[in-house]
Image (tube, rainbow, N blue to C red; front, side, top):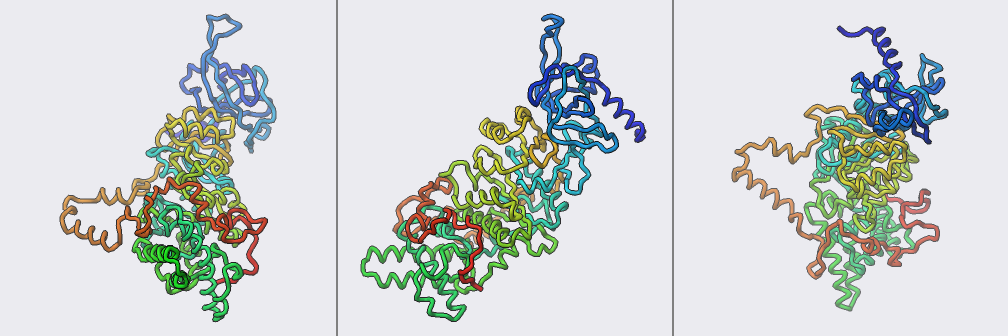
Length: 613
């Protein structure tokens, strides 16, 4: 028969008076509690690492977490007598002066004294700390200490100061992320969520709430790519050849000016040089690929030196090869038609208006491997820039799966513009309503300056020593001792730290229904495959799709036949690659004295540059 509310309150009062022990020593923010043998004999009074206790200090209840339990010899009763001792890190306090309206606060104002009582926390007291009824909190699971108490996170604090979910493969990380994002959408209907889905696994989790973008429906015009990004695309992820890069840096602004002149019916602009037209290689205005090729060809026709002509010829071949590749249709469809579709692209990507789907899932599986880094760079940069120029009027949460690939700790690895774009959101995004969520299975390979900007961390099971050491360095809290048992966390369990949580705690993410668990689409298709599907007609249909889609992914479509250097793997890009595609370092563009290396680092609005329509 269920207990009445009166009986539950009576039980809570009885439990709260069970003395587990007394304060034996005080040191900084931790205390040593000598546990009472009679209290430990009661199986309900389990004292172990990760459990919360309270210490009575006057009118205050000091809340702490057990970080170590051991036995020690008693110096009073002699070496033959042993006591069980617990080390407790103090984290906050509950004011008992108002029992009808208990209030929990982080930090400790008054320290306990020797002999103060230590007792268990009741479910009601745990609920005061973790189960806030504020409408700005979301429930993400239950406490490991008491599964009847919900674990809540302050959604505004989590967003405003960014968050990260860290954990090895197979620990329930994707399910935890899906639950956090769904609850965040429900609590913040004004928020848009943009999710980089590296493995095409999140569609199942969000269904009708998400707009799915993939190579089949994405329209991201090539002229939205800045100079480093378009060079990365044209050279297939390899460092750009300096001679060709110099030509592009000079002619792209002219192609933009030519398009603007034609649209404005001012053909006189076609005679201006690249230094006086008001456009740079990074100005996000349209231009036609045909104009770019025509200008390169025109210059090539004026040259008499054969070797110089070959440089121009190879560049034209490179542009034509990539733009005609069916795998790049999402960039180059309508490349010679023109038209300013920037508003349409942003509307599609960032769900403005939402039309009942406030989330965008960007499925990366299916994009050419050579262009993935540049695509992620463009999307991240557009997210920040739109927040900047809109004065943060449309809050956006940018969630990046496999974050260590796009913002690696090694500055010579990865694609520099992508890391720079993610870093800008981490440092400045909150000022413009752009928030960051990082998800990674290898935190030690993630740029530490970026993850240090994440105010809330959800650490799941990690067995790698480097990852554990990285996490210990990232957690600036007295409960860093709790990280010692990260390798032993169960599936869907996490240690939650930071500003979004009232206290660092061990929790279990809520379990998702089986049809909502993130799972790769390729795995799902394989699971549905019947033995009869492997006949010749099925194989023939695959081959037909293979042939009509273009060259295989291991073909370097961007390499002219005279280029003999082997193409390195994208992860082997060096810092010299970034220098090779930087027109400022090549001396091609004048740099104002106060300009930062990142052309988007200056936050003032342009005033004189003409805008494409």
